[in-house]
Length: 447
Image: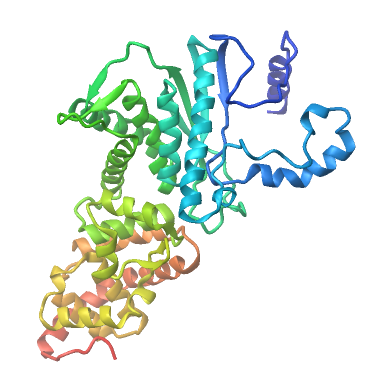
């Protein structure tokens, strides 16, 4: 192996010309039109890293040691920040207005940079763009800038690049894959696409690529973003995409459509396409983000992809804990800590309506009673819910949830442990259902 590496390095390092580094702005390149065969860029990932602020630490020492050798690179006391292409609301006063200005600032500079790439790229040339971000808003900004500049991806691949233990990502449900998009110049005579036609093409092309990504072992949040490249490849071939009523389809609309396709595909692969909306949301959240928190906007987009409403999931199902603009999905122990939810479950049990409740309610109720070692109440709940055989779909849901959660850490791992124990005892629990039903006993499930 070492010999092969040495041979490859020796061969690839024989470059017939000397490279050159240019210090300047990507939004104003000092090169002639249609000059390059390829441009490869790894642009700033929106608000992920404050690059210039971090660079100040090294800049002040480099300026003292080599500043006289490279005066053009060290002409300011600190790293210049006014035209840095990052989303940093603090530079614009913070809060919502600062966020709005920072987003617009980032998109402006990104679009100018992509327009310059379009200008210096040969008609048959290729631009390779690397990008990774969990936020749909960040992707929307990047894609809008790319498409408005006249570039679109013709191929894309997710590549595992990020450290799972990275300190700036830990606790944020971050993704580990970078999406590499090979982009071409969109033909100047590109036509208008119609929504029905483009949507049909999305529903054909995106699942084909998703099968490749699934077989490659890509899962969770990475799987959601892996679909963005193929989707934009379809969308970006057109100068614009229109609905029959004359309204233009936005990049945001495209990403919502793509998320719905990914959601349906993932649920099908997990064997859970039949699930009710709250349970689909819960399983997909755990699958993509484990026990991490999300922004309200991002969680709401996930909810919409399964046809649910986040406020409804919070108010009626107690599936959401919200603090400001951040949300978290609680495990069974915290969810059943709500007196209102316990009362709703007891009422449904007493009135014989357990079978009408979401499957995640059934699973969490069973886990709660299992944790209390209340085997008789467990058997009573199984009987009232109509779970009378090992082949009942509820057990398949519980098994799928276990497979999703068993790789997670923190408190989600506690739920996975309880699930494994419950599933291991389902045969003996089911044997007790008939006895409990014959007794005619009334149960208080809580307290």
